[in-house]
Length: 198
Image (cartoon, rainbow, N blue to C red; front, top):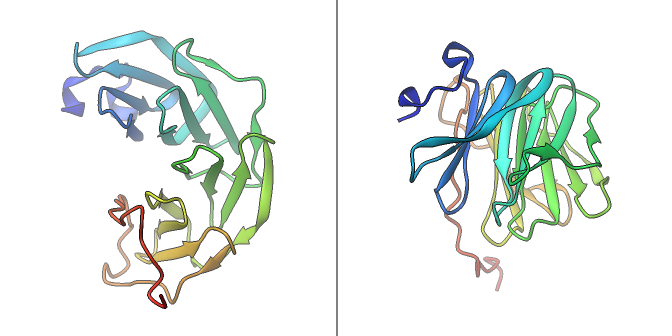
């Protein structure tokens, strides 16, 4: 379906994200973000300028009101979906932002470089310590439905599970893709998941 949507720069399409209700898709390219209404199959508003930054990753907030982008200029930008304008507060990473994910309660944002950083969205500041474990750049991240676990994939083919509260890995990295990049992840852990010790 993506090849039927004119992003303006189809050869440069880098990332895409669906809203939770699957009615809107955001497409990220070299310098622009475009929003599409999938019901009407038409573009929403104008192309959003990413200010000459390559958009590496996009993630909608669960309520669909905000869209977060991570880019090559080490920025994490929150966009108001309705106005298509950035909010006043922007976050600055220490490295190129390769992946972003929003927690189900919309309180935390995870950003990935070669490590993971968690951000308090209300306070617009980093929380905890950097979550390190992958040996190469992050490619994809996803929160579990209850927000307690974060799963991350990297360019070296490894997948890791993280305890969000303690910022620690849950076991050893999962392998099975050789050295191939992990380009997509999906979480299907039930929201009422209980610890195996109980």
